[in-house]
Image (tube, rainbow, N blue to C red):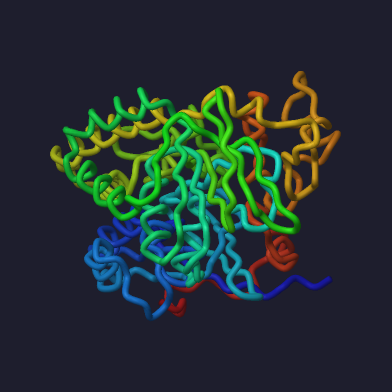
Length: 439
């Protein structure tokens, strides 16, 4: 089979991820005249938090940064999914991306990983039914135009994301019946009381709660089963003492977010507690790679923007503004408190029955797994984590259920065309160029 044609560009800095952290880093570096390319899977930059359809008005908070990115001179490679990164010869990175039917290679001296986070789905009986989606998934569907008018919705799981999603569903006309937070009332109230140091966050949370004021917000409750004939029709929730079954048309359930570290691990960057390890300048253990935003720990849009600016300053050889560092420390402290408050409770492990599917891609039930295995053994014996999602869904769940850390990362990091894989072993058909990529 002949090698596919590969387009290639060369830049000074490649930024993977077009969310707030990636936008901040790219804009600041590109404004100095450096050649910068931003690779993002979406049709428009903004990430999940600032997601908007092409031609639609972006969120108000995003306008300033999106406008700054547009004017900076950075090349924005939309709908580009990075499937491999190689530390090539000559002190450069070679990134292979899916962009239509022709692979794209981006050669860069410096790499900024702004790969964000993904939802942590913890299995329960019925979680694979149509109509059961993640909390962030429900948010993404709404932003893509999903009509929920009049639909009965239950939101369940953990973390502050429950609030804005419940508020958005209610604003879109859904009948939000209940918002169930698995963390204990004591833990949630302790976290809320600590927000006096961040009054903006406290006010924002109050506004979200007001938006779905008709729905109960129940702390210390979690989903134990979803049922339905062909799609979800009801969900059963418990507080550990009593059970409540609620008829619904849509269940949005997930236990927070986990950092997306796959590309960082692919090039050998160290991780700890599930996040990419960085120094005070956002530099990873690879000397030419930086990591910013949720990949270094889930902390929200404000922290992501600050980390992007810190990395940009260091890349440009500038002294990092001390106020930025103080702001980052404060926001990181809040993020740590959030992690402690909303950590998944042990009872969520007991919800899973032997016939509960834990790997959706390969239809692997919990009963097929053995507690004494490693993740590698689970893959070999059951194919858990070897489906199209490559463990992005089941990986965090299996780590929670069995304590299995993430396995090694291999090409392709994302689902890829055969042409992209073949391109990795072939010489580039088009010599590198510095211009020509569409913005």
